[in-house]
Length: 394
Image (tube, one colour):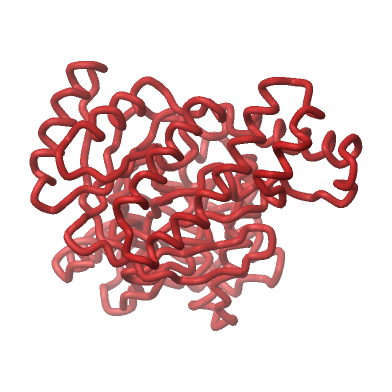
């Protein structure tokens, strides 16, 4: 975070809550982009996300009472609660994300006092870059730090996921929270979601850059088909476990190899369920192949894996949309592009493309103009480096 921005936010914090800036702590959590491995985390397979340099800042100061004040530079709504009043309320809007984390931490071990909080984010809301997970991980990290409790980044990710699942009501997997908690500069995280075994893999892209395209088509996970897709996958596992020979102990769709799935797919009589399961099995294999290619320095083939991933998400998992498809299809026609795909849960949100640095400006111009002409929407583009996970800034 730039020093000038921190000083501006501290001034705003003092305007809101009084006092002086000397005792304000500053924390930062990134957004994340998933390079490949979409809708795999809740299916127990491998994902390959990376933390971004854009994200969410939190300015934080302890109080002497049990009052919680929450404000955000991105929303007009300010919320005041107490440590004894942390129930979910729809009217509290964005503040339910930090509230859910605070509630779980307070249940686990009573928080000693209230605090004033000011959030500032430069992750577009609803873009699919995990603004909500960033807020959740950030809140957990800051409170644990302020309470002098042990900071275990994996446990923070699990706590943030629990808040999303149980408090917010979105049955998300662990990927977003884990990448934000465990991210490392210039590395992507190869995470096996069924046991949280992970490796931080150097992302050496040379003269190629990641360009994120925001469709500016909002999607709300809680009201999308996200939970429906998860339910379809869970149902597929149950059918395979009970009706396919030798799969009595199957727990996750991603436990199946491509060859195994080919042999047993006929057990899933529903064609939609077959497509969902096929995506999971093939996407899981693509992640492992992609990491192998990246370690070999074969960016061209890595880019092809990204594009194949998008095609599967579009045709088999059916979580893309016209806006995402237009942006991806146009990106692939621009010189210097090795691959492009939707990233995130889908139904809107963002794309990620691997673009040669000499063509980035051309990419943004061509894709932006075509996207606007085809959809009537104005896309936004970010050239973001891979950054560190959640941390205290000062």
